[in-house]
Image (cartoon, rainbow, N blue to C red; front, side, top):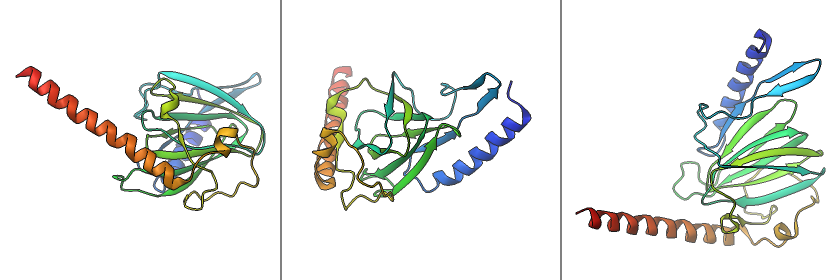
Length: 212
């Protein structure tokens, strides 16, 4: 059972993080996690279906990264992400690319680390990049099975990005080094999201006709 001190600490961290989410893109959620420590180490619950995060992962992945590694910037049009940093420290850069969002173009950075764990939900249409200050391990769940067609990207240092971060000469993958501009990414995202809306509309008409 968690101690009173742990519970009070969790409440304080949650309140602080709720205040921070006021400055995050709409739909991005941050939840403090409670590590239970003793002489053996620590135990931390990472996910429960009953938590009000609005995310239901069907695939879980783990990745380790070296210091000064940057993964991104990526955006998905099919799946939401549920992210926890287990070891090390990372800056999670975010930018809202949804045309219909009340926080359109808002950029933000969320700091995550293994000593003060928190879970971060990133919805579809919110671009994100992970910059690791130290060697780190992160766990992330996704709400659709991995599909390369759901992996859109732009350069992390595109001048149009509103993410307030300052990585210096980070190590990136070959794919991310070849990523196009933010303008190209926006066009690709609008095209796929527009196609999804058209298919849903057509599906509704077909279902309606069949039911009559």
